Amino acid sequence: MSKDKSKARFRIQRRLGTELPGLGKPGALERRPYPPGEAGNKRKKFSNYALQLEEKQKVMFHYGLREKQLRRFIRDAKRGNATKNWISALASLLELRLDNSVFRLGFAPSIRAARQLVSHGHVFVNGKKVDVGSAVLKVGDVISLKDKSYEHQVVIQCQDAPRLDTPDYMEKAEKEGKVVGTIKDLPSIEHVPFGFNTNLFAEYYSLRSV
Image 1 (cartoon, one colour):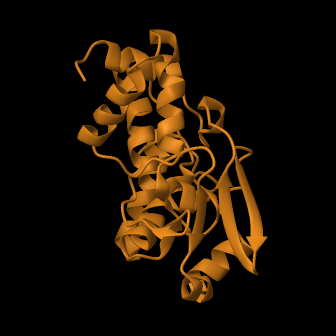
Image 2 (cartoon, helix red, strand yellow):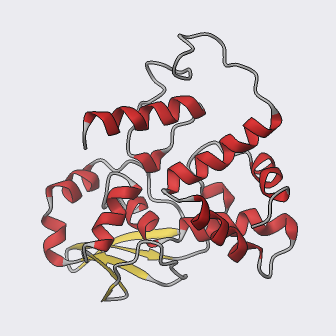
């Protein structure tokens, strides 16, 4: 990763005042827990719209989504769900994306890196290669890597020091000497691994057509 990209990911997290594990850059707020350009002053007061926008941006940056993709997931979440439940359904869909699952299992240092593993054919679901990072998994699905992929230095390093603990909706175990993960339950809003104001997020999209 270039220094410029690394700095950009630090700045994103500082601007939003939140560690976003999916960006793969821990410690963004440790030395400078304030937005770029504010030199340690208290955070400026923002309008309600600006606060709503920040919540949307947290989701987009952490999960590596474009606006169009996020709106598609919101539409899917709202189908068959009462208004008050659609954000929990959205969190479930985003957490069950294959790229996020590969990241949460500690096979990659970021969601972007996990997406590359998937697109390059290193990831299997139920024994079959799946190369679409946005594929949404189901309860009972088993995630594993191609045999040689377990020997990649990045995979080994991530397994030794994963960015996040394995969430309780997943089970991580060894099968024939290889680490595999199983989706054992549906994730919910509590599994989103960063501070997330669901009310502000809902307000933002309540005023906009998706």
